[in-house]
Image (cartoon, rainbow over all chains, first blue to last red):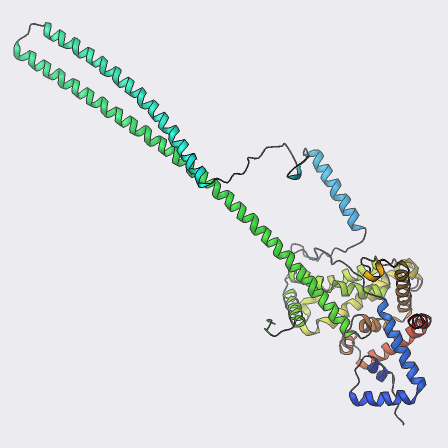
Length: 279
Length: 210
């Protein structure tokens, strides 16, 4: 047999790239040449031991490229970077805390950290329809009580005014009766006076009802305004709640995307290893 | 590049990777970041095996991805991304070692002693509770690493690309701008050199198995 495998053939054999015919020829030669077979076997053993130098696990740098920066920023995962960054963060928090009145508290709701004066935020309440009805009822009752009070005050005033008018009328009648005037003039005067009194009473009644109607309108408007403000606040809170949920959803989606990318990276690594017969 | 119904997971992964390359080439920084995440481990490990040092591997990976960011717009064919990327990492590795030699004033072999080992973030489960086995595994890995560093640069690059990175001969040839036969020759002599350097280990390993 004059054919002898060269270095390319050996490599093709080791990496399974020989055609079936070439493989047959190679195997025949190997069986007939023990020295060559030993050499090929040693190559195989060398290949077999190389995977003992396994891949190192590394964490990809984050962030890699800042869109706002004209040059890419690749932050390397240097092993000293973690403790240094943690220490720097703690130092920054302590300095900021010193200058901005850091408040730390721990209660049943968990650990809280705040800067500046501790302002008690109003408790967020979500009212039920019954509570809303009760709230409206209370407001209406309050308005009604105020209205009744006002009405009684006006009524008292009205009664007093009527009584005063009555006295005046009686006095005027007495005065007229006491006069010795011609019959025709006396009747006319009495009639005019009574008409004047009626007009005055009518005007007073009109004022009273107008005033009370205006007051009632004013109270109802106030109630509706307050209720509208309350609804507006509720709407704002709902929007904030939805926005927070959306942000959480986005964050969750990003985490899932990151996990997917890691799986893909793992697949690429696996594929590379599968392509490598030594692994 | 749209995923099809009958695509395998690998097809979907490759399609996703290709889409990221296209987006990154068009200037999408988010896609570029994801591309880095996908390839960082491979590039770091190439640099680690090439330079034998965690710190140098980090530098190599960093410089490689900065270079990729600068040059990705010039990438013509998405299909040739892998050899293109490895060509960049080869150049960055070469430059990094040359710079290291220049600044330290030592020869490449002399500088081995200064190189820091990589942090071992993960330990295989079966070795976690077997300190002896773990030590042996580490010693074996160190021996192989030392043998790799002993290869010529040309041979080392080809051995790492084929044995550890799983590149095809066509891709190695494309990355190094050489013929496939030249790549095979370099691999042959690289493995031959490793065989002689690792003869004792191979022998002990065989005895251990038998």
